[in-house]
Image (tube, rainbow, N blue to C red; front, top):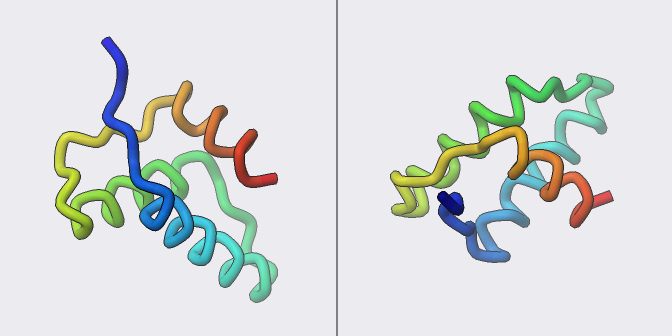
Length: 64
């Protein structure tokens, strides 16, 4: 089935996390992105969210 969609504000929080790591020259692996996206989703009250490979691919497409 379709995964749970995150709001734009939640996605922007994930983008901010990625950007802060990039400033420190820390590469963000898919595993790190999966873990952090799920943590941020839970904090935002979206406990059903799963950062699938498909989600990661489309997320990266939206936030180049």
